[in-house]
Image (cartoon, rainbow, N blue to C red; front, side, top):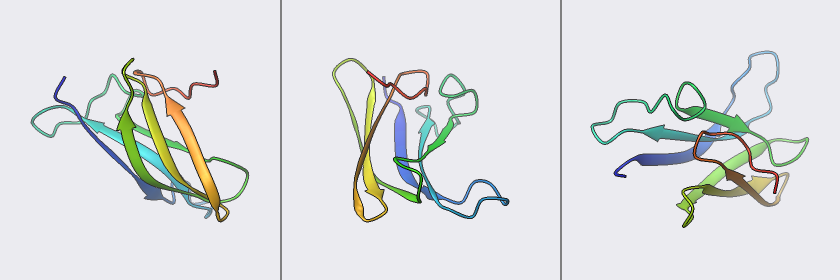
Length: 88
């Protein structure tokens, strides 16, 4: 639907310096898509250590597959269209 999705790495909470992977979704003009996680931004970890988001792809059912690194290993996460983690 013309939306832009960016994956990356951020230190989200000052009290917890471990980096987290994130997905940010924008609408076609660059405005934040608030239907995604309430504020357009979803941060998460692949495991208990730090995480780095490196790539994102749109799946056929509009879920997002985010790939990255988790403590030196491959990390994968699937996010639903609303930004929630999909544990299925």
